[in-house]
Length: 170
Image 1: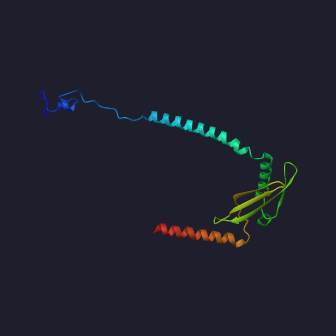
Image 2: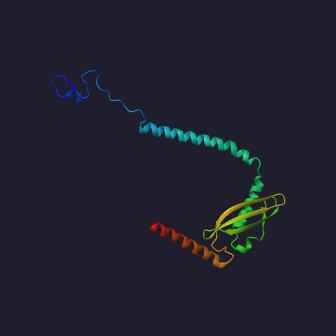
């Protein structure tokens, strides 16, 4: 490189080329942190607003077909079944007073899952003009038909977890 003025590369080191314009330091194209945070906040606010508008438009359409009195009666039946403490009493129909004076029949069927004390409970509520079903999962340690079922499930899960630990230790 040819340098002028007797300096050995000093001008080039200071950012000036011997021929042409000074070397310009260009700013990288992108957003600053403040701009990125502001853009993200605006996006989040607009996404929330759009989701609320959509929900408020669709929810009334789904509620147009439902009867609020029947929904309340059904919830009463579900609460009655969830209040049962004895496994054998689940299959017996429970009388529940409806809001319109009708006597509803609520019952449930429980099946143990592979998780100790967790049951799948199928609830049925019947009235003169409707029948509805719902499935929920409940924790009930005392609901096993045979008292050794719980111990068997716990032993199986313990063995399974010990096998997993042994494999992970290898």
